[in-house]
Length: 638
Image (cartoon, rainbow, N blue to C red; front, side, top):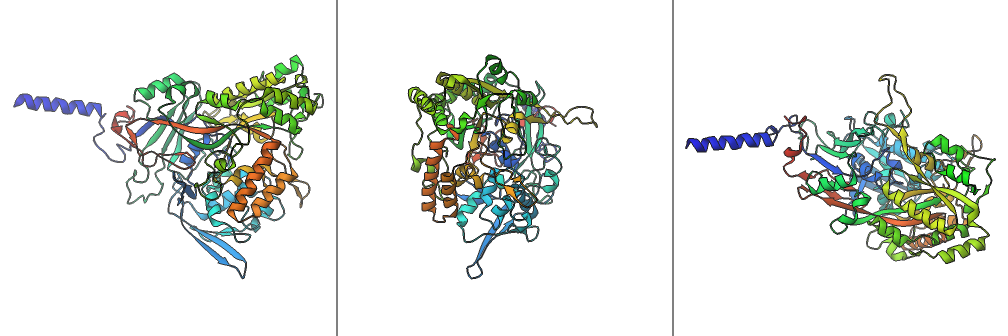
C-alpha cells in the first residue's frame, strides 16, 4: 500500500513539473494560451487604410482592428461592431438614410468605441488632401464625392454622430443597401481614434502609439537583427463587461507569437516537430513540400505591376544602368532614378540632365511587356497562385453575392503564356527599340515571393530587349531620435517601398493589388480619374484638380464606363458595365496583372476552432490549443 502511495506522489510531482506550476487557473496566474505561429511576413504599418497593397498586411490588420460588418466564410454579411441598423426612406422628401447602432465594446486602452470614431475614419478618407483608394466606397453618401473633390466642405458630408452609439448616414438618393453593407465589411472603413491618429504619421507602427479595436492588440514588435518578432496579445476590453466577464470569454488565446529569426527550413522543422502551431504565410522555399497538405483558398488579391506613364525611361548607358539598383536608400535612389512624378502631385523629382522618353505612355509598349510574361511559369514557381487572366481576382462578387463570381463570369482576358515573337513585333510597331532603354522594377526587398516574381519578370523583359534592373527597396530604421531614451526606437521601421509607391516615385512597381471589398467596383474604380481617391492638387483656395490614377492612366472611355457603373443601380446591368470596364483596362494595361494570390495555411492538430473570413483572413478569437500549459514560457509560468 505504501509503494502505491509513493508512486502516486511521484506521478503528481512529475505532472506539477511538466505543467510549470500552472494548475492554479485564475486570470493573473494563467491568462491563457501562447500560440506560436508564422502568421504573415513582417508588417511595418498597421493602418487599416494602407493594408491593401500587401497581401500579408490584411492578415495582421484584421486581428488588430474590427470592422463594422464582417463577411463570413460563406460570403454572408454579419454584424460586428454594429449591433443593428435601420434604413429609412422618404420618397416624397427624397431623403434616404441608414442609422447604425454600435455594440458595447472598447479600444485597447479601455475607451469606448463611439460613433465619432466612424465619423473621423470616414472623413479622413474623404479629405481632399489625403490619398486613400477606399474613398470611393463612400461615394453613395450625400456630398461625399463633392467633398473629396474639394467642391464642398467636409462638414457637408451626410454623416454624423447622433450620440455615442448611433451614427447617421444620408445618401444622395435611393441606393443598393446590400451593396453598401458589403462595402462596410472592408477594414479600410474601420473606425479610428482621432486623438491617436492625429498625434503622429507613425501612429500605427509601434505598441506605444497604436490603439486598436480588434480582439488582439500589438503587444511587441522588434526589428533588431537576431531579435525580430511580433507579439499580439488579447485585447482585455474586447466585447467584455469587466465586472462580470472572465478575461478570456470574448478572446480565448492570450498571445499570438511570431518569431522572425528562424530560417524557412527552421520554420518548417518547428511545425513538423509540433513547436509551431499555425503557418498562415508559408515561406516560398518550403511551399513545394507542403503543396499537397496545405489548405488553399483564393486571397482576393492580384500581384500586379504598375507602370508609371509619367516616368522618363532613360536611354541606356552602362554606368547609368549600374546605378539603377546599386542602392536601397530612398534619398540616394531618388537622385539616380529617371522617374518624373505625375505633375498633379505636390512633389516632383525632375532630372533635366537625364535623357529618355515616356515610353510607358504608349499602350502598345505596355501590351508588349504583358505579352512577354509567362504567367503560368510564375504561378508554378510561387506554388500557391493562379496565373492572372484579368485584374479582378477570384473571390470578388459579380453582382451582390458569391453565387456568381466576377472572374468566373468574365472569363479569361489575358493570355497566361508568353508570346515573345508577338511582343517584339508590337514594340517594333510602336517604334520602340528596347535595347535603347533601361529601367528598374521597384519591389519590396523583404518579400521573398515578390522578389522571385521580379526576377522572372526581369528575365522576360530582358529577353524582350530592355535593360532591366531590380530596385530591391528595404526598410530603414526610423530616423525620429528619442531624446528621452537617447536612442532610435527599436519598434519602428519605415517601409521605403510603400512610401515611394504612394508618392509615385517608380518606373515599375510590384504590388499586391488587394480587393478593398468583394464588390468588383472597388477593384476597378480607382483607375478612373474621378474615383482614384488620391489627394487633389489645390489650384486656389476654392478650386482643386482631380488627379489621375497613380500610374498616370486617364482614359475617357474607361472613365465614362466607371461613371455609368456608379450610377447604375440594377445589379445585373452594373455587373455588365464593370466587365466592359475591365476589358478596356486589360486592353490599355496601365497595370499588368501577373498572378492571382492564394492563401495557403497548415494547422497543427492541437490547434482547433480557427476560422476564416471570406477575405481569407484568420480568426483566432475562439482558437483552442490543446495542453496549452506546456507552451507557456518559463519566465511567465507560475
